[in-house]
Length: 281
Image (cartoon, rainbow, N blue to C red; front, top):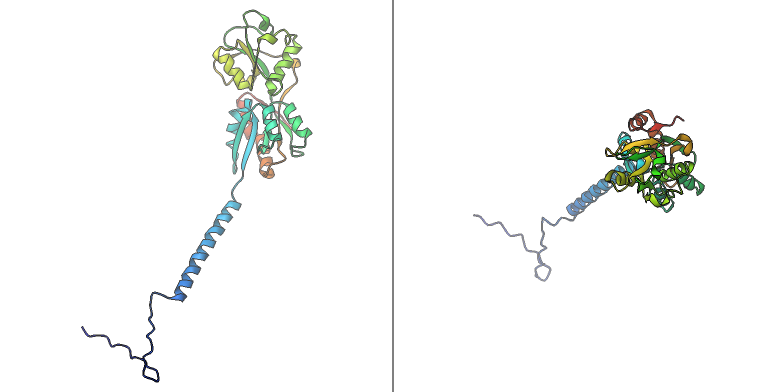
């Protein structure tokens, strides 16, 4: 194999050789700079695309709703297009206090006007968004025995489950009914107060209470109980479910759109199928 000729040696004027400069073809400053620039540009492009995606992402809405609206409002909001909706259920008074204390919520649906009035009084609702959404009835539930409200004073009834009147609208309606019928003071030793209407249902269905007072729509959700009688309409204030956008929402337009949807014909059909009466604006 022929040997490659050596490059000629360079010498200075005294005959001394100049040192040969070593070259490494893999070490190319120009190529390295171009490569780095390509990586940097690709990274910037990826970040820009990610940020663009975030800016167009649909907002997630939180609805704080009375416990008696479970699961019907879940069914309704599932039909709402374009925005994910998360429902937070509880006693209306407790939910109102959570909102007053800064808990995130975009839309509030209460099972009575009082919790909504309290938020309105402190300026926590978006002006012009409050409306009545639904109506309901107050009923006495039992598992087997017959008899209406006057039978609750009998010896056979030991425990009567009702919601806590100060935080549970259904409990406040129960207080109104029993007071109107002259039974509130008489039944104090029998009353078992609960945190929401679902607990009333549970107490009666399990036999831990002989009777309970709930909304008509709640009674439909528990097969072990039956409606013994309906409270006279003049024994309590009308059972209404007001709805309003929370002032602190970061998605006011989407929350307004959801409120309109819940008041619309598709949602009304769902509410009516579950026994609610809808309100016509």
